[in-house]
Length: 224
Length: 252
Image (cartoon, rainbow over all chains, first blue to last red; front, top):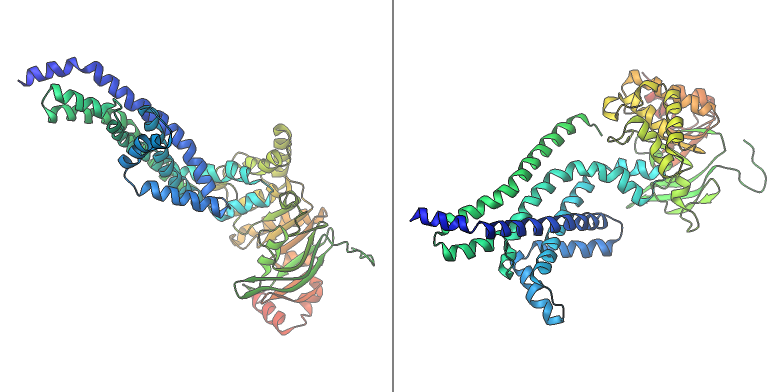
């Protein structure tokens, strides 16, 4: 029986590849956009404007404090009520980008705040503009703190992308649901789905670990 | 060092400046004028407000009331472009504050390239010359973590000089240094002073004060208690507080 199931599974591999491809494409686009947006939000959050900073803080808390599934439903099912029709792919990208941006914003804020005040004062004293201080002095130093958790966050977000299957996107998780209807062995099917995610995530886990070790070692040399 | 009757020629003019941290009056009615090319040493016990005083000059601290006019521009005035004014004022920190991710040369050339818009090649040539001038020609490509404290502080001075400032402010530049490194930094500061830089120096290095300062200002509890030539101040301090302070720092 297991032999038949394996044969049947092997027949589903084009579907599985499509699902894996969807998961990778969705994650990749959302992570790139989310990183850009997250850095922008993080920089604004630490900027001088209290109103903007407060608004971003509230939004980040809201997103971090609600389930991702609920956010996706709101975007996909509620927005059309207000005349904004989105296809599942766009809705998935928006939801995942927003989630990524909020988590990355918090990481970036922590990184920026870790840079000693004296660094900003030195940059200020030599007449660098706000953007130059950020670009030349603060961000390069913040990156040491930001990079390891950033890559770690990517892993979490790739796994969170599985939630988009709930609005009908044929990602790796949904492929699992489809296949399990033909091959009634949930353990086997979802074991393979898990392996699929692991293959995507493991290189990033290794990267995060390497970055952490490298940053840790470099930190010893730098006296501020 | 002349004062005309009608207009102030001071490069830095404090007129009745007050500042509070919460309810603490950290600067009390400061009136002080520093002439172009003058070197003023500010000393006083810890917590007397001397660092705050010079941090006000480039706007790292804001003043509460009174007037502070630097290079003809009134601080706090909406017409004063603070970023522009800061390019004319070098500031040397007690803890150096070099950029740890940039080499000595990059530390020196960063502001000239990005703020003064000097072409990179030209800025690097000038930067190398400045580092050579402070005795670090061989450390051009070293990172701050690879330099001793004295070397870092000399890079920090070169970083300020790279902007060709009109004024240099020093906030206890040798306090964080091991004793054997103090003189290499003071030597550079003496050279800068002798080239005619307007300087305010917070320091307890009395040898430096005697050598290059025109004036020593003694502060206590946020106020200027005494002001005079180094000779007057060290030999004939006028107040009990300055006598007590001098007896402490000159004992060793």
